[in-house]
Length: 97
Image (cartoon, rainbow, N blue to C red; front, side, top):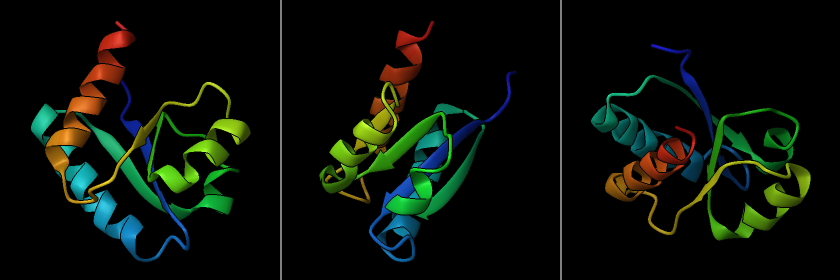
């Protein structure tokens, strides 16, 4: 097994919804049997960090794309939908095979 994925969950301040999102991502990662280090962050801090995958809402998608060209980003609407996140993670990882 390779090294764990680094996944950063991003919200405006990095203290509220990003924690909810991180728990949902954790459930998705578990469901897929993956290993990941899941972190929470505000946008400004996340823009300075490298990650394998960023998870955020549509508000920060364009900003991350500009700051991190080629970044793998999962855009969520429902912060509690772990099945959607698992599907998106699967798609990303499948493209890399």
